[in-house]
Length: 295
Length: 285
Picture 1 (tube, rainbow over the protein chains, first blue to last red):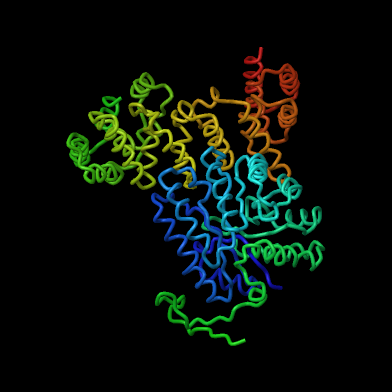
Picture 2 (picture 1 turned 135 degrees about the vertical axis):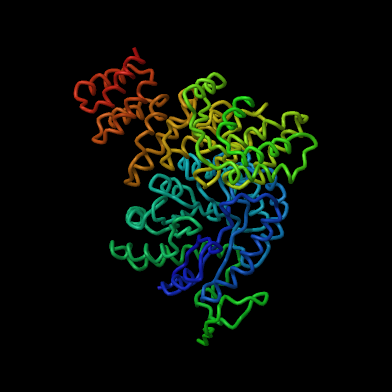
């Protein structure tokens, strides 16, 4: 079964992860721009990071037969840092028009401050201007209130709700998101956010329409195989293959292809691997025999 | 405060450390050379060591007289040294002082930033550094977060309500005991109780456990529906839930809480919980 992980931070993962993901059936991923754990001190740091998402990381994924897309934005946490926020907003238009950018994101609330709201709104306006869908991060703390405020802001700005994916939902926020016209993402995590079995129960209760699951794997305790693991759990709990396919393929493809930056014919097949390729003279190999596929 | 720190450090340094530290203090005198100062600020852990100050009784009394909310006992020797270096910059004009002090944070590693945050409440016009302190709460490095959130009087004295509430929630999320927050009792508020109540709903819906000390911030200003939840947890099989529910209920202004506490007193077997119930009943009467 081919699968899509629509939220995973591969810059902080290893090539062993890429191999395991490819073996498990993941053929396409979206890597949202986020914060790196260490706060950045200047806008130039963001330029290099965005370039990395669009360049080296896409190449690295391709070396394992995985199509890599990304979303670009100033994340909610660093929206609070006036030393970088305005300067990053200034450079966004140039990145939002690049190939492989399938949404503006992650935007949203973290501490739910005024600065976060102002920058959240401005980036949603940019998404409208550049005709991109929007990926909204919901906060860890005070999540329900943050989700309600996010939906309110989407409506206030007259953003078509089918162009908005609200992520990291749980039992309490999912009904709110489904009541709006927005798509509902779920990050399946080892300890926090959402677990496989809880996810399967939610699918049984709410169906598969506008439901998306992802691993949100990053530099923390997380698992890049959570999408395939959730598929197994859903199957085990009697959810139909059609519903599972809707959730782990059709929905993310439908949502992100609204960007016009995802070729629907291309994405149906896994890209051939050619590990003899180099990026800026760099290979992902360290002396191994390169895999070259010719399917 | 400078004299106190100086005396505390003096008895805790061996001769090489003493020579090094005198030079560090000289570097804080005019004219300040940026990189020299930053080098001394960084070097304190290596040169002075990181063991706890561990105050004697007389020293405790002297520290309390200066600031009863400042637990110097929790500080490392290096952290006290860094605080004294920053305080020794007070000869500078206010803007220059703020600039130099902020550089020590912005360019510091985790331990330097922790030291900076612990000493923050001592600095003249420390309200100027509010945005840095609030931003420090956004870290994922738990010891760094604890340096501002725990055993530190700065947040309860300076943080606006929204930032204070977010900090308390972050403690609950990370299993950091909320009674480590200095001055929590005077900053309890309705929004904080509402946020804690929503968090309990979220945890219950996910089939997960609830932090046992959440009742300390949930109970005080909650609406009636949330209060009946606290009453339920006052009878919980886990005595830690009972303990904190009992303590939290002591800060409510509700006759029903008195009745519920009195009821639990009759059947409570755990000595700690009994004591908490008595204290809360006394507070409510």
